[in-house]
Length: 237
Length: 189
Image (cartoon, rainbow over all chains, first blue to last red):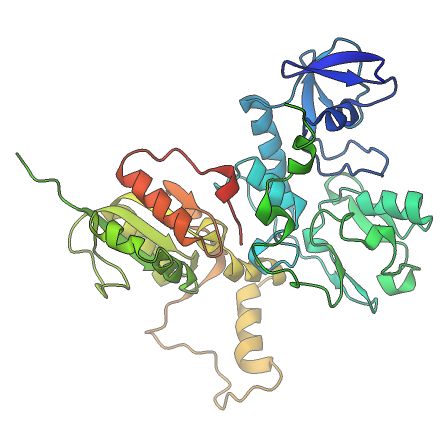
């Protein structure tokens, strides 16, 4: 049952009171690209990849409430360019070397780059930060070179696991995801935590040891289809 | 009426692993079709070390990690109408560019060479010198992607790119009909 409807790119989307634009779009089978948002976690609205134009204003679709009769633009050249710039900057901000990363093929950042046609190098400089690897935990490793600070692990650990293993430290460009202790081994993180599961970290930062490279190339999640195909499949027409 | 000539193609492997050149062979029998349209000039495949004449398409594998890479790349830019960066190393530095990020000190290159030849564990380097023969090309301070050195016209992503994407891109370029890649074919690994 829907309370009202609004339009995304000329398609009428039914929505309920309290739903965000992204939730209503997901239910209707319209994929809005996103990185920091994940089903089952509270919305944060920090990556801005889900930026859409609602009545001409740029808003984060994951946090903006759906409203009756708003006109939302989702897929057009201008918005895709904005999204591609954001994703490119994420690639330039960390050390994202797809050929050596065990998340390659299952990585949402990489899959988003594919979806947004990112093939050219850009004029942004690579920051090439030097970040340490935390392999102290017997079952989990953290390679923060690949972290995009989406905060999904933070919300999963706090809200689902009830632990608070991860948290933000620093401000501005220095804001990083950190662990609640000197190293991961000093926290109460366990490999069975939801925050550690493969669906929470969109990149290859949270690594479950002795698991990498088990799926052959060609059978990994985004080898088969573009990111968002599972949502687009729900569409009626 | 003048006969249509074959397009001239040159290739080079800079700071790469030759995997992208091997990927060219992944076109399999389509190579026969491609060779009816192109001839290979300067390339490791022909072992020509210099250009015999100006080429239509230059294909570069790998980024620039030493002086010689830069000279070869500049020579390709001067002698090719269209320059293609083939694979992630040529596009963004790739694996060799890991040294840009893992060595943060005032003299990262010196630190790297000292560990490799002097201070590293389990070394059997009797002279305890960093190799310094004039015949060795000088290493650059960092590994550079091709587009940081010269202008690149097209980039074919992949590590290594599939034979399909290389063949399709070349055939479309030769026909003047290349307008980017299908999203489904883009891969960074």
